[in-house]
Image (cartoon, rainbow, N blue to C red; front, side):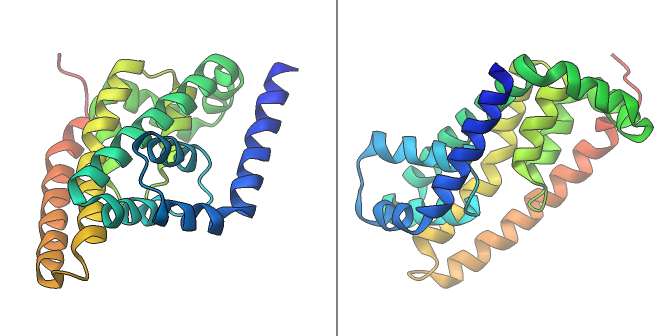
Length: 205
């Protein structure tokens, strides 16, 4: 019963956030209360009714690139920890059974569990990878919480820094924004090259 209530509350939260998404955006543009903005960014990460890249850019515009990035990094990391906890402590048994029942997922999970830190960092770095899926999968696979949290924090930095910078600087300094995008692509390529061989290779330690 408690599990179904959690699902119902989550779906209801998504529905309400979707209905009032434009009001939320308007409020975020006008209100600069630090704690309310942090709470709003956390809720929008938990209930992803809007692309979070848009939220990061909006915060970069409202607070400046650095403050906007710090707010969104804190909020999205907190939201990820909450989703991870809900999945791990309320749904892990069924989720683990499902992962084990699918051979491809079972092998993938075994590989991830050998290098959980690198795997989560890599997943966070890939811009097209659904970040909510990372939170849910980490909880379902039973990855170490602190390893998952640290890897999430590290992996989020380049993307959040870029989108917050674009939000704060795109219209003021378009040339700098272009350079930032090139730097991000270079950092992403280097990270993928350095992390990928160890993420799914045999564990040596």
